[in-house]
Image 1 (cartoon, chains in turn yellow, orange):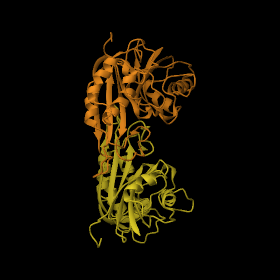
Image 2 (cartoon, chains in turn brown, purple):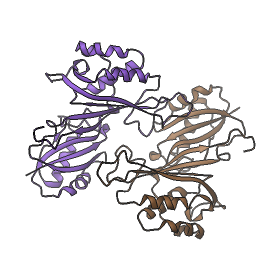
Image 3 (cartoon, each protein chain N blue to C red):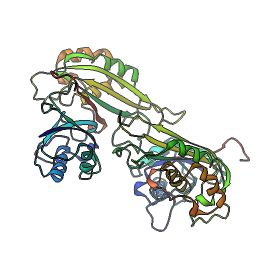
Length: 261
Length: 261
């Protein structure tokens, strides 16, 4: 019996999220079907966490126990040959039997991509939220910095969250503005990518953070409102839930070296 | 009567190229239908040149004569509202009645995008040629440099080319390698973007140049073979025509300021 850990990229447009659910058509379902087709094993994989319907991933991580003797180096190509074009397994390693993708995840990074140019980008519209009107990016970044730390993020969690503890840690959060797709001399504001790294995220947390920051960028809220919104522990104080398709699970970090992690 | 000049971006995946042809479904057809729907004028637009089926454009240019009184600033949004999602008009200016998009084009730049990482990039596969095996990029660049200058490019033109004169000038040609989508510690070779700027291009010219350079990168040809291939003026000496979907018309340059250009 071996424990295999893999990295998977997916374009979430066509799927009902990562994790298996009654309606089917999830990334997990397709991965499990590909493994079944390859090894004949009907097994359940463990993902680092769910992603909502429409959300993408560059570096989602999952693991599973297998009795297959297939050598490690052949797994990626063999699975990719059995997966739809918009799901790609890029890495496979063997890990200790005790390894668990969800429980041992130490940090997750999400990227949220806003196209603040006047026109949508036809080549990236599946992964960008198009916001053609004025955004105060400096104010958004100031607001974002208030969210770094260890807090009860109830105000930024879906009311449907089933977690009892809403305390999480955001280790780092920053924005990058890429003007390379902007028209010279225009009022294009570039592609604004927000990266948020945390210990874990509540349901819709990144999307509610972004919906709130977009209101800050539009001048409807002030960056200085963020501490009060956090302290209120009340979902109604934050902004709307930003659209799913601009969100990407960017990476998941583990501390493989430490036995007790 | 006004002469309007516009810039258009399109994802060429779904179209039979830019220019109107008997089978229909071209970018030009959709632009002319959008103009008709907006102004009621059944007119013909003039593009800076054709692009093959499947080829994309970030900065294709076209112009047309119109009697419509619609203010300049309203054209882009009004046309985009009448165009499919994968065609977007991004700029509109008024030009002298004598302006002609094709005849006055001074320089065109194409980009050809090769994904030389082990796995395809799900978010860019519509615009990249995936080449997962070893490519000698330094040799490809050396070969590319031999193509800069003024030459008879018959070896790099489709046999179906109907032009009598195959002399063109390539002003600049270079490659950029982007490792930001590559997996650390892997043998991923990055995204290799080749930019070629010329006075004009023969049918399939950029794709045959790229097919030849890929053979150089694979070691099937030497960079020093390029001058001999050029001198032969024989299509059979060059490499195959590289796939269309990795090609993008990047920009078209005009000298608006000079009356006699």
